[in-house]
Amino acid sequence: MDLYYTFNAYVVGGELDLNRLAVKLGIGRRYRWEEPMKLNPVTFTQASGSDHEWVYLYYFGGVVFLNCSADIVARFLDGIRQYAEYLSEQPQLPFREEYRLEINPGRELAITNDCAVLPTYNQIFLDIICFVIAKSVALERIEGRVDAVLDEVEGLIANLGKGRLVLPDRSMARLASSILSFKYTSIAHIMVLDKPDITWDDAGADSLYRTMAGLFELNQRYQEIKHKSETLLDVTEVVSSLSHAQRAARLEWIIIVLIAIEIVIYVLELVGRH
Image (cartoon, rainbow, N blue to C red; front, side, top):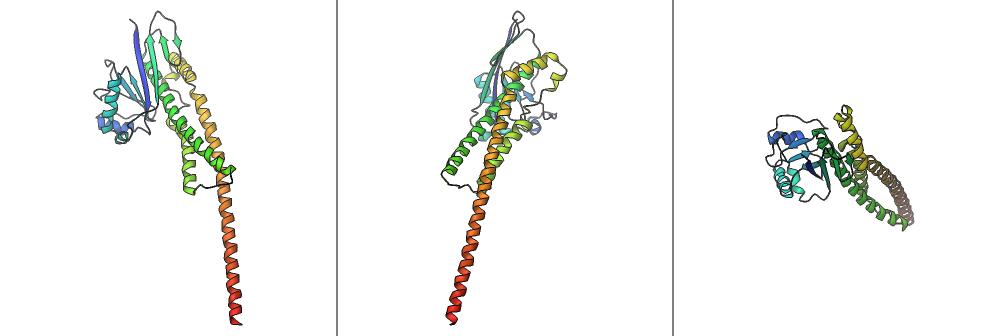
């Protein structure tokens, strides 16, 4: 019998503390940093092989729904907020990825960027698909943030072209912090350069992961984020240097003016004495 699976991936704005969430849900186990939490989206209990609907939660903020209707997705996202308080501040999840899987022994293996056909069922294959699309949607969120900062920097460069440099130190520090967080999040949180452990022992799983990672261009997108981040850092370094030079020049003029005022006062005192 043919089997069909649907995947819907979202990303929340921040890190999910799976171990803290497990305590609140009454799950008596600890999760390693690379492990997803697999839940029944209706009962909020650990998913089992008899469940038809699953939800995968990744600590970097990825949430993947397996075979879940829109109503189940909405109810889960609404219900999970009582266990993860900061999710209540995220009424919308704008970044989304969809995928479909068909298990059909009579068809040839086929993997594209929106669906896959596999001849045999293996739970590991579901895990890998969830892992890849969770990474993809998390990268999409970072890409959106990078583009927003690029737009901000573009305005800054336009002002420099007009001879205006107005950027407080606090704003500069915030900008640099945002840029550094792009590189750190894409490497450390999303594990974009890491493969699942199972791929080291299972050739089929490794092949599927490599194929899907290539189709979703995970490495290329990471390299682009890295390149844009380095460009932004170069710009902030130049602006910071100009800002310090401008401040130093201003201080020098203040010192010159103060010295001039002191000289004038001294001269006036001499005139007054005579």
